[in-house]
Image (cartoon, rainbow, N blue to C red; front, side, top):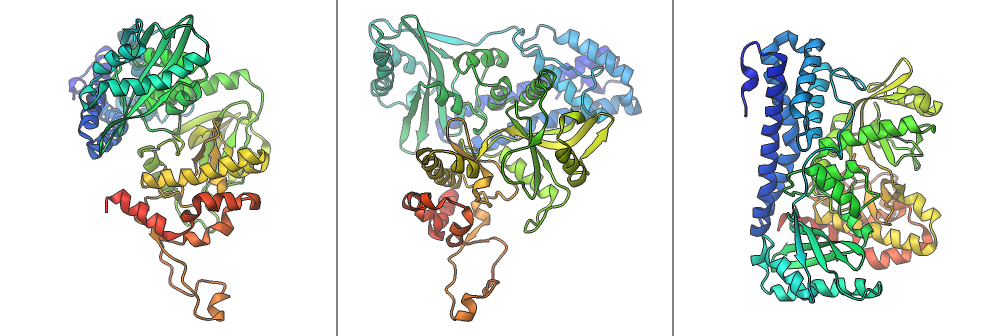
Length: 558
């Protein structure tokens, strides 16, 4: 860690140089952790990969805190001298001008000044308020593979050069499998020849036990993006999928997935390239999925400000049932929801604000396998009071008064989570046609299975706590009761010994705090009657404790 900020009586220029060095120290450590993913993938060292994933997420705040402590040691009470920070910002901006990913530096300085001054809204004098996205220098390392007269030969040569090629026992067999997936795509488009070139980003995208190769095929006037996903299973390396549909690629890079570990020299250049594959994908989402969550948060906030300036609709309660823990609101013309923790929770909720925030942090650092929505935490948002429906504004001030207050013509939201907006599953089932409703309900069961596979128990399984994505996938988004399977005691419902016990209003047997009775779920889930048979046929075992115990044992390796 650089100690440049600890020298006595540093000038604003020297302080700016020190802050630049501190960001570069952070970036160096971020890159070092990212590069270790290749080693973990080769060795199937998933515990180490998991530890690194959490460490990398926490790294940014640690470096911000260390920078503030160093500046405080240098400046003392003068750390709150705004004029000094105006000068620091000016010198800092001059030092980073033209650097690759210079926006990352600007966001780093913003994080520091916001903490030092407890900034509400935006302070344009001492923080940056626009990004230089698209103007930074740098490029993405690309490998170009000529195809010639044989697609399979070209793919084989491509595979031979992968960093994990030695895990392939038969490269030609891998190439044949990939070609079987690729060829029908071109045949269906009636192109006269296979692609002439294959271009791939010259760095695998690692995520837990998978490694993805991202590229595009260039042929007879066409450009087709593709992703080859490899998984390093216990019995060796396998091809998990070959993705050609833009919707599938977009889902792989989506807000329900854990962050990739990919060694990119210039992240902003990679974001620009990936957007050619996924034109509808928001910039903030790509930064987040590439592991640069703080920059993604910044981009999301700037996009929200731009949208507010260009729109006229008002914030309203988000569709769905009102929650006991959160007030959730949205802007109908935008695709975000804002979740604010209530000051008091109605029965039967018996949790606390701190416990709810810990649950969200747990999910933030957990593997999400495409079934958990990424919730980004924001503080001290300033939103125009006039853009809120009166009833919503009153509820926020009365029910969330510890974090919401008025400041002139603005509402200050001291703390909230922002997520992508989804259609609640219970509403979707009422609105969709019978086939779509059945698919969604069955996918709800699949979601429960996949969450259990990563040691996640939602706690509250009601349909209102799950949402449906634009691709029709069911994901979970209400985390106040989420927990590890290891914390749950899955029990059979005891048989009553007499009629008196059978009709007792309260359980006649002991129920522990962590006891879960899957046999009692069905009446409370709210599954439409016409879909019950389909659900029980596919997922009936989820309504008993044995399946959950087995999942818990598998998660621990028991």
